[in-house]
Length: 171
Image 1: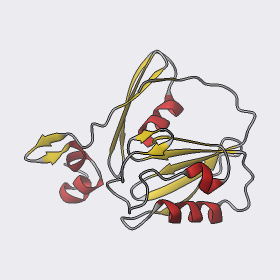
Image 2 (image 1 turned 90 degrees about the vertical axis):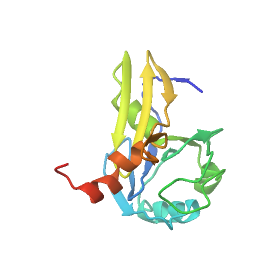
Image 3 (image 1 turned 90 degrees about the horizontal axis):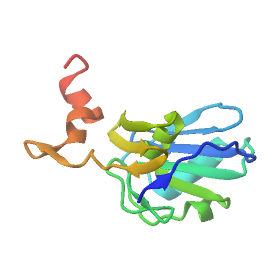
C-alpha cells in the first residue's frame, strides 16, 4: 500500500532501529550517535528488543522507528525474515518498547531518509537487496530481492552478502 512521504520536524526524540541481516544499528534523531550489535540467523524479535534496550539504557527517547527487513502490515512484520531467527511475524514492537512505535520495511526507511522530492528508486545493497520507490511523495515498498532471477536463484543471491562471499569483490 502506498503512503505519503513528508519531512516534518519532530518534537520527539526518536530511537531509530535498522534491523539488518548482519547488524542491528541504533541512533536517535537528536545526537546522531550510532551503536550496533551483530545479528545472526538465531536472532529473534524478543532478543533484539532486549539487546536494543540494554544498548540504549543511557538514552532518553519518546518514540521508536523500526526498519524491518521484510514486508510490514498494520505496523507489524508480515513474515519471518530470511536472514534472522523466528518470532518476528506479527511481533508487537510498540508493546515491547512501551512507546509509540512505527515499523516499516528497512529499505523504505532508508529511502525516506534520502528522499529529496520527485521520483526515486532506492536499491539498498547489504546483507541482502532492499528496494523501494518514492514518486512525488508516495511511498511504495518493492520486494525485488526474492523474485526469481537466474538458474533458480533470486536477485539477492546474486548481489547480497552471500554473493560477495561466493564470487569476491572484484567480480
